[in-house]
Length: 123
Image 1 (cartoon, rainbow, N blue to C red):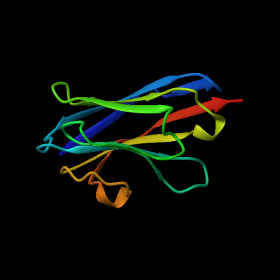
Image 2 (tube, rainbow, N blue to C red):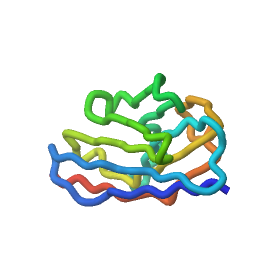
Image 3 (tube, one colour):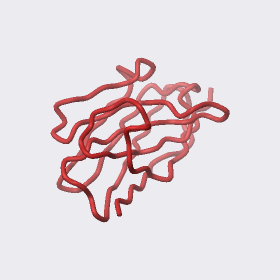
Image 4 (tube, rainbow, N blue to C red):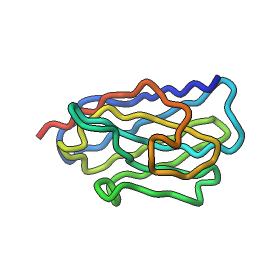
C-alpha cells in the first residue's frame, strides 16, 4: 500500500511563496510519476504539474507555469512544489498523486493520492 502525505500548506499574502512537500512511503512501486493537483472550493480538481521518475519530463498548467517548480528526491521518496508569486486564485487544497510511471495530466491516470494540504492566499 502506497501512502502519500503532503505538508507545507498555510496562509500567505499575495506575492509570497510556499513550499509543499509530498512524502511517499509503504510499498512504493518502481519509477513512479508524481504530480500535484489542486481543488478550490466549488471547483473540480485541476492539474498543477507532473514530474517523471528521472525528472527529465516536467509539465505545468498554464496558470502556474513560470511561478511554480516541481522537484523530487528519489532517495528520500519525496516531491516538492515550490510556489512563488502566489495569487489569490491559487487558493485551494493541494494534492500529491503517484502512478506507475505514466506522465499524465488527468487525475484519472493516478492510482494513489495524499489527503491534501490547504493553501490560502490573501489579497
